[in-house]
Length: 477
Image 1 (spheres, rainbow, N blue to C red):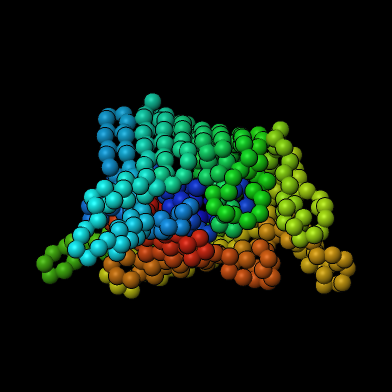
Image 2 (cartoon, rainbow, N blue to C red; image 1 turned 135 degrees about the horizontal axis):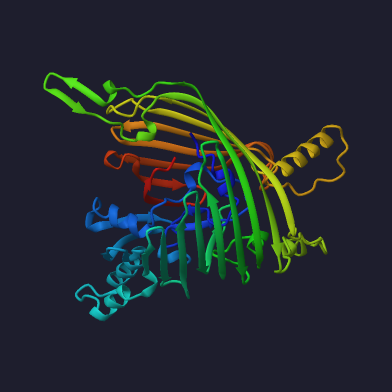
């Protein structure tokens, strides 16, 4: 089924989205924004671990990625590789780097074109292009096991075209029924629902999450602290989201999820063991999560409450309003306490067992999301007022008021290769668009790794963000 846990996880501060804008391949989603597309969630494997694995299947261990750079002349295409790794019985260390070739190639062409016909450019003129630090980025990551149930992770990365470094420290601890995570970053990279990136100078969070129980009940508690004024990663229009402004935030949430099978064709021994004239051979599914054709309905419902302490209020769109000549505007202030409900319902239909070479997998997931119960109810109230002509002014549309429809289509191409489309539709008006419209779409090719049971190499591209990556994903359902 489509990932129902996005409904609660995306409301907290540790929800990571895949992006090539950071060398570690992740950015945090702004809490309180609409739920992201299902395939946007970052891989559970660290980027340095992905590079170590993927390097075995790519020439020279170099993995390409695509994403806009802060300097246009650098281009969007980049190459990443694991440069060094070391491991002991209780920890590991990895050094990885990134190279953007466009500026180098353009510089070398200019040198050759500017030289005389009978002479080559001087060696020092060529060398200066290779030594341009804006072409390179470096990252160092290390994880150490403190106890069998606890580990600590440190990472640091620097980009030649930008000043400063990005540092991170994380502590993981597993309890019998809970996971505890402490995460600190200087600065932290966030992404909002419009695809804009923001750097928060200091971001520290402590999260306690329960494991999924047999009853389907789950809960989380979190403390988070922002420090410093958020800065746009690129020339992002508008002011930063209120959730990124300085302050201390305490948040709690719970959810209850359930799944019902309409019908399901269970896996049998004949599916796994195939008999031929030459004998028997073992034929498992390319992915154990896709081994049984079925139709099912699933749902999740829950609530969360948030309390803010300290910090300062922020102005939203004040500069834009002043430039438009509208005079003074009333600032939007962050509420010190909020409580809300959320819910999702999903229908899944799968044909095929994903074992044969062709035509053995077609799967559709349709998920309807209500991101905010209060905003949805308020939106219905405005709609009724408009119908009966009682509305006196067109206020700003709350992006959380519109239900979202997520459609996921998966189709086997050949063997373990699957083409997948993740699309998200807003069923109301938002972001300056009126009526139902497409908010996001994402295309990917997935190569399932049978030996990993439910692992795959994913090459994805997002037209909205103009970004693409190759990742290793494990047990992503």
